[in-house]
Image 1 (tube, helix red, strand yellow):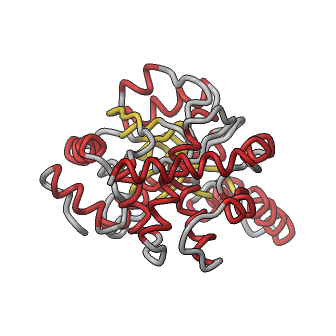
Image 2: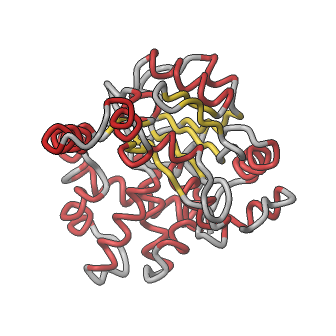
Length: 304
């Protein structure tokens, strides 16, 4: 088991070795979360790297990553545990057919570990090879307030109670990272349990560094033009601006097409890798593509 980093610089270096590039502000709050054992709450637009930092920390520390993907209607059975009802029914029918088990013994068997289906929150509380896991609670803003209240209780004590078995408490709390795309406000009580950080779009230099680490096959000119064009796009009135994830996907598409630089025609043909709504694509396609590309190239010249 790899040890928790002992400084902010070591945390940044550790993330960098996993090709995760971030600023000192995010590196600081990540270090404090690891050092103090407090959950880390990351909020920001989709595609800015909130989920990726959990993957990077898990890989860097050699820990298992357990992901709870949140959605509307998520309940305790899906998040913590449920019983294998099909298996229990087979055991009941078998016992009835053979008459080989008394009622108490059958009940003990039915509600034993063999029939318990572990979901992410329960898995994260149990001992793991390599040390406590990284528990990623992704897009918590998609759940409802009752589930938030339940999470608050779980993160306070790092334990859950299963009526048929008893209370299961983590011997060592997991490393917890929660993310939110801010589709709605998450209750203050949950945020207060965590260290909070807003993950913004990276500046030009950092996004170039990210692109060079994630898509090293792209030429320097192509990488620079991609980032400059994406930054120009983010200044437009779009339904959904492209995140870093889209920049990386677009770069990979362009490399697959053997592109060494952008052109209006190439951008138009590949906009679906960058923009995910038809209204946005229609707005940017055509003459607007040429204008934005010219604007991006002027910004590169000004920066030289």
